[in-house]
Length: 260
Length: 361
Image (cartoon, rainbow over all chains, first blue to last red):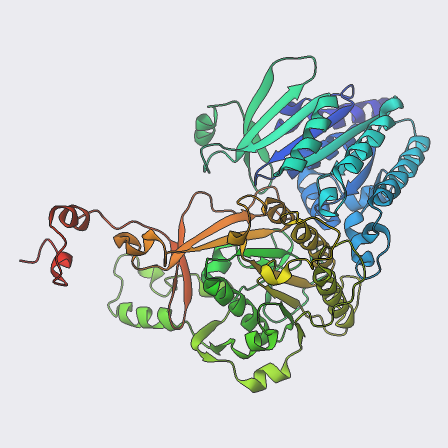
């Protein structure tokens, strides 16, 4: 008993040691987290770090993969200190991979390739819902729904209204006290922006990842805006992506970072 | 792609990047390979936004395909603008050493012994060759027909189009996806397949989204800028990700609205853009006279890693020689004479006078 308490403490400390997670400061009371990716900057690291936190806290998650592959998460996960595939085996992560199913559907006009796009969204939500229910029943920990890049639904030819209602359905899941939702969106067109704004409106935390306005810099990869509902102030960070991890610093602090 | 963890696959023309667990293959242009951090990761989709005349983008595609044929990779070529067989027939011939490197190095080899840093005497002066997987090609000659006939090439010219699904406004996109999938299945390129000998499929698509790809008049969909294109790229990426395949697509983006391709770029892994000087006012720019155009690297996705290998705010230019298509960093020449003198002296008809060096008199 005593050992497990100590282990929990260690795990917790491990999660908090990560500088990005400290900067993000997402608490379990933040039920809806949306990540907005602008331009050509990559916000995937936010999700992979949040996964670290979710697993570190001993929670479970349902992961909907639309942008990157399992192999990517496995490789990045190893750098952050978790074994993605092993977690899947142990049932702490369940994945739904439209990216894989699409391959099957090409030439068959089934599932994702049917003409009635409402069916596509409904089908996807049904599988999410059943997975979430199974995860909730499996234990007493919190359960997260993580969707990597919901804007790809647009690329499947799904109308905006169906995507919005899909988001609404997903958010209805948080009626269960133990469920939280993390959704990543990419913004580059008008329709993307509508999806994103709708999502931001209902989010507890909005994490916005932006490229630098002035172009590209060697010391700073991009800008990180964290907006929490109820607080008017937006927290801003600069971040630098390294091969092995992310460093964050307050605006203007990156210069000191060079001398470290 | 993604996880070449089970030892090495030993596919000719590929190399494993241990750091990110990626299988890399060459674009056929060594300077592009080095900008991309070694080559194209297998399982990715690359978009090349064409220059106005489309000729330089076509050359990059030619290199990509020729490199595949030299390495005995399987190939799928698709185009609606020209006969894909002609693309293959006119691929450049391979030459076995770098045409420019050799002349330079033969000049610069110094016989004198190093007296101070003698330990470094026998070290190679450049480390380029050690991890170079690509070949060099002579654009003035075409590849021998025997080589072409011996390789596994699939041509797609969109002749056989059935009106199946209405997901795409133009069924040709759907047909091409089917053809790629068919080829992957037939050649056992899927990650889950277990063929006796692993190989890589190269998919080259020329001028995707050109006016030849416009939807037929009786389609239900409105002309929604690049809706078909977005869907196609997304589905193609899903397909290529699940297989030992790598795709290069050229798109005439100047025919579209300025930002309508952003979603395509988001769905792709690598995006680059060519911008020629010819026909624009840059053509007469003195400091750019050595080059043929700008090369912009719009996107380089971070796969299996946090940080993209994107080199940052470096400006690249390309030049086309008979035996080499080369990309290098743009360095503006020192501002010595030309700008000042050309402004002060009235333009004279006599040639050569304005080019006179300051030190010449």
